[in-house]
Image (cartoon, rainbow over all chains, first blue to last red; front, top):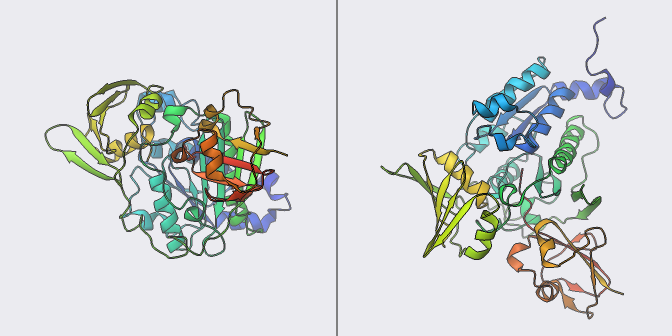
Length: 338
Length: 79
């Protein structure tokens, strides 16, 4: 008799042989493959989820290695697409499951194709624009998804089960204003905090997939550095623009940042979904944590080892040195927040 | 009797010497709103994305009696 690689999991009463078979027959989408996604992939591939789809637009960089546990120095030196490095690793971990990987930017135009044929979506994105888009798509197509976000030494997570409980816009009706909030690149992030939140998300997904009682639809916050754990009740709002009124503004691309390649300039302009009035003093303070900031007249010039951008008071930014729109959106999300 | 204000992540800088484990206790009058508390503590409204009062989702206009636990979060979106 051959050894059962899932033996230690299958003897859990929460799983059993039936639960294990359900996992083998199920599929997940990991949207984004940064620090959260790396943990999701490891746990779900090892647990035996039958089909794992990975979608990420980014390349591996040296500064990722502090917390993105799937990658190594070779991946960073060769600037391997994260989706490619992740697929290689997960196939090496478990050759009996199917790994699908795409190095692509998720947009209102393509998100439906990524979520339609999976059972649950794990949020491993690093920006709110994609999360609100994911929320719209998942509510519209009644797909469960698990929100996770981290900043500093803490993070939050909530299972969102469309039709039965609150969605992201019941919790936060409007997306945060572009360029007005901290990101991991400007405020830092503790690797252990990401691992805890990602593990919590993975457990919620496994619980859904094995057909156990659905996870609680409460917002959980954990600060592992200060030893704090809290869980909060969130109500489904009848007037919620998304799950209440079924007004899918992000999916219909009414609330999406616009990118334009600036011909002949090797640059891309990113415009936030709505006009903003940036607080240059606060933004300078945040950006100085990540690179060099020069304030002059009507704009801020910001430079790091990987990018250079000019930022205007209305939230518009010109990202220099690239004509790749997905890459430019990525830099905007990383440093200004969107 | 005091209101306990619990601040997450980047909001903590607004209370010098903030104790993350204990939170920040302040006395308020009954009928004070969450917005009034943020203004008194000089926490900019636009930096707060989530408001929880005694473990339940609240908003800027939620009225307080003075003995609650008020938790404020910035947008938590890193990943």
